[in-house]
Image 1 (cartoon, one colour):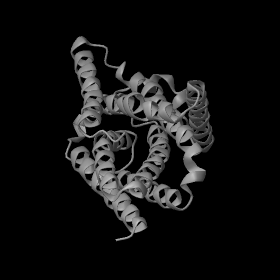
Image 2: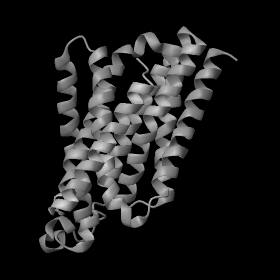
Image 3: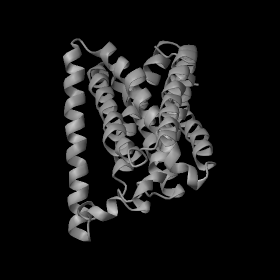
Image 4: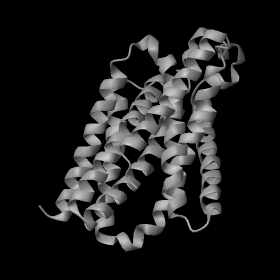
Length: 265
């Protein structure tokens, strides 16, 4: 099998496999668990950003300031994107953002009135991340097939907890299971695109890896800190707080464990 065929097959198969495993984990959770599992998703996002994508971005950067500036710009971009979605919704119908009493209603507790904002931004960031994964897979296969296979297994293993977190966020954001699956499936095709482009023009794409990784990190940090964590503060009781912190740590730990058992540096 040719190197290009390996890249396409592994990128496609790896993306679909990680997606299926993540879907099984997320979809088997009860609906009543979704608001609880959001805490795990927060940990998975923060773990992926600070333990995976940001360290890789720093490795590809000549100057650390390039990474931090890109992250700052990315956070601002996602803030503006969220504002645009809010403005569009507020012009189309009554906007819940301006309905303060509703903010404290039981329905708001599940954060299912954000009209897909956090889900949309997670998918945007994940698409950038998958594109970079495709570049890494192609680079590994162009060195050696065995290295390419090992790198791909590592990337698939890294993706499972993060994809599961993405599914939980999409479901919690108001998307149906079918919509969540299709959006994540669309995002995985970015791995194939990144791999094929890298095969033909890797020497011209090296400079893209660092900003794409930093931008993906910005999306994860922004969604976790801006859209998801504020929802946890609606349950200030000590039992809920212990549960939330435990699940956040579990999400971070799952990313850390995958990174240690399946390093792809």
